[in-house]
Structures are given as structure tokens and as C-alpha cells.
Length: 236
Image (cartoon, rainbow, N blue to C red; front, side, top):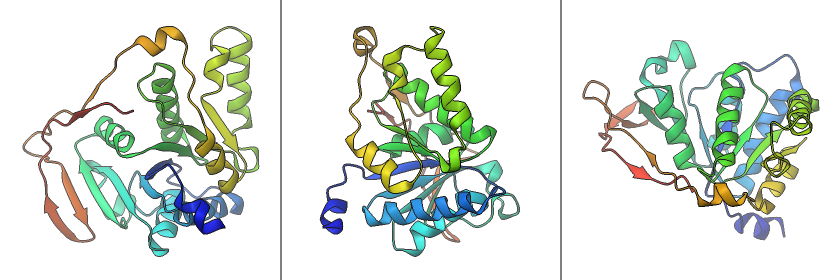
């Protein structure tokens, strides 16, 4: 029964944002590994920020070791193993952080945030904002391990109460305390937009990489070059 449910997942890949540190609680590390295993169980590939350090490393290794698909997207500046460690699976090198976020979003059918710091929060809020503006209709989930994101959810609820976030947009954020429940909620997510946002037409354009830093797909230590060619396409 579990196998048949896994085969019906509507996601090809899920983008996971998380810390480059492991955090102080074992629960954070366990949650990263559990998420990786749950993605594999559902036959869903992983897109993440590359490297092998912190929670990023734990979730990517969990997927890779179980035979799942892993794509790491990482700027050239952070490619050194001294900075991020050795990535597993396929690595796509990009010119900068903006291209990294755009490429991760383009490759993914949903987004999940594990516990993390400034970078995780910035990536999370950007895809939430994109959903609010109708740039994409992909589900966004918080893996709220031991209440890590409770204060953020309280802030969002306060912003709704004070009139800074529309109640309909509060529904963009899906949360659960464990990977299985969160992924199930994301599978069931139905995007809702107000009439004005639904009329907006957005297009995401991938700018051509400059000649000194062409986009590359890297597999382990073997590097194959593929120049970026101004890819254009909607995130939806």
C-alpha cells in the first residue's frame, strides 16, 4: 500500500532549504535524514544548495545513499570543498546566488524548509512571496521540528491580524512536525489566489552566464561543461 501511494506522488523533485550547520539538537539532524528517506520512499528527487555540510549534507546523503536523485545547485564561489564539502549526485554550478535560487526553483515542484539560519529564511520567504504574487503555484512547506518555526508562524499570524498579509495568503505556508505528514499535506495542497494576482502574467528568465563562469553540470569529480543559453520559462 505504501509503495502504491509513493508511486502516485505528483512531485518529480522537491527543493529543500536548510542550514549549513547541524544545529544543537539531534532532532534537527534526525528530521533531515527522515525527510531524505521519505523523499526516496515517495520516489521524489531532491534539489538542494549543494555541498555536504550541516543539515544540507545529511538530507542529500540520505537521498543519495538510498538510490534517489540528487541535484545540488551551487555558485562557483562556493564550489571549494573547504567551504561546502564534497557534493553527492549531480552538481550544477552557477554564477551567483540569484541564479542559484532561480535554478533551484525552476527544477522543483515544491519547496520545504528544514531548520536553518539567515540563508534558509531568505530562500523560504522569497518563494512564499513568489507564490503570493502568482509567480508560481507550487506548495511551500515548513518542517517545524520541535516548534523551531513557531515564532515565524506567530509573526505571520500577527501580520494577518494587523492587515499586512491577506488571510488568503496565510494559506500559502503549509507546516507539519514530521516529514511524512508534511509531504502528504503538500501533495494535497490546492493553490488559491485572489482575482488580481490571478490576472498577473509572470515569466522567469535565466540570464546567459558570462564566458568566465559557464553553467556546468558536474558529476562527482568528472566535470562536463554545458553553457547556459538564456533559458526562459514560467516557474509554474
